[in-house]
Image (spheres, rainbow, N blue to C red):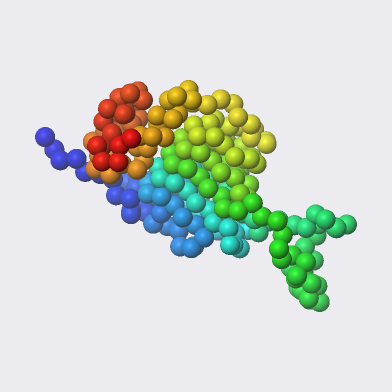
Length: 218
């Protein structure tokens, strides 16, 4: 029997002959972005520009946190809190950012309300062109439909779509969602994941529970 060889989480291009696909964890350099192992982005143009082309208005201190085993289709974008404008006065225009004497009024742009970190769980699939607004939290196992504009939190294993994105359905029953969260296959050692890829991809919840590693098991 041939030895099982896990995929390498530190290689930039995991698919031979497909430079359009990059693993994000070895790519990102910003301390404001955290990405788990094996989460990838697919773009035929320049996937390596993810930090500047797909994470927008990211001036901090809010973070973008993406879990493990997430799949991001072409054009998925995260709008961060730096895109915020004042809305309590007659105009929303950010005059101080334009320079000149207007810059003397930069205090008018500080302390704008924020929604905190944007957090994506594990095993989330983003369709092409989805947009996530600041401070949104997306649960484990969720699916974000192509072209969706996600303005509010998405539950674990929820499927959302539209503008603004609405919950279409949940992929599993409440009981099975709880069981899947308890088994948390994405936290298994990668060697164990490698051994049970077929069960993770096509097995039942019970079959997944049956092969869960003993250590850390509920």
